[in-house]
Amino acid sequence: MSHIDRDHDIVLLGASGFVGRYTARHLEKAAPKGARIAIAGRSRSRLQDVTRDLGVD
Image (tube, rainbow, N blue to C red; front, side, top):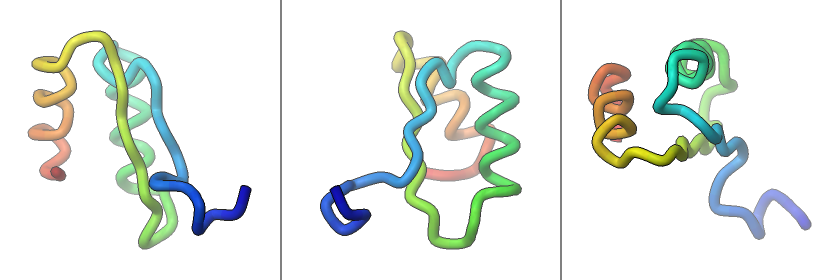
């Protein structure tokens, strides 16, 4: 599968937990410019908190 066939380059599962939030912050700073990153977890409201804390959509 080529990168053109994918919607995201990285999908972070468990992003709403402590380690997931830490990893999301790291990815936001360290991922290459233009990387398509998605976060996933069990709690929609906690995922929305993570995106709000990161200042991203």
